[in-house]
Image (cartoon, rainbow, N blue to C red; front, side, top):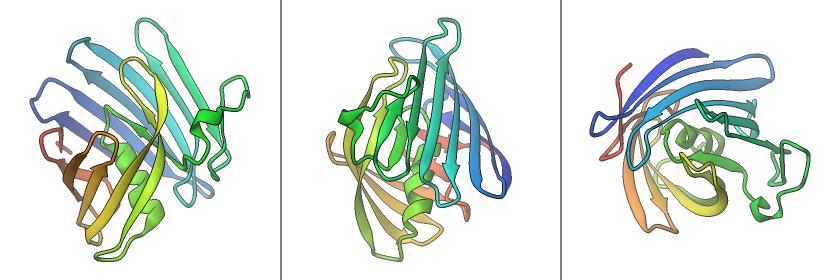
Amino acid sequence: MRRTVRWQTWGGEGLEHLEIWQDADAIHADGMLIGHGSTPYALHYRLRCDAHWHCRNACLTLVGSGERLELHSDGRGNWQDGEGRPLAALRGCIDLDITATPFTNTLPIRRLGLGAGAAQTVRVAWVKVPTLDVEAVDQRYTCLQPGGRYRFEGLRNRCEYELAVDADGLVTEYPSLFRRLI
């Protein structure tokens, strides 16, 4: 797989450009986000997942300030910061969710491989943008149509969205938040 994808925020004030590719043993994502809101920002992120869509490395950098967040995972729920210090607060998180991109919804969708009607709750390392604060939160994914539609529930915020995805599990529509351009 090698794809170039672009999303726009629902209101049109933000944009993302993502390059995603897979090699023999890893899935790589390199994205640039330009966002608005209470604080305008530009964020560059790079993720590396193993062949089973477990996030193993993440590096997020705010353009301009250079503020950076680096995370490493063993793929089994144990995380470390960029200096190799264990992050006990993220214990049990398998997936990573960056709030400003729909791409990170692809990780649990692909990793879980849910059949029609199946659902699973996952614990994710939830990265807030533009602060780069990270915490563990629970989310639930329900497969409504394999390779087509999933219900996403943010259990902490009590939000629910029906996501449309393509055959690669990449979001095409995330109502009220994101829509894919290419």
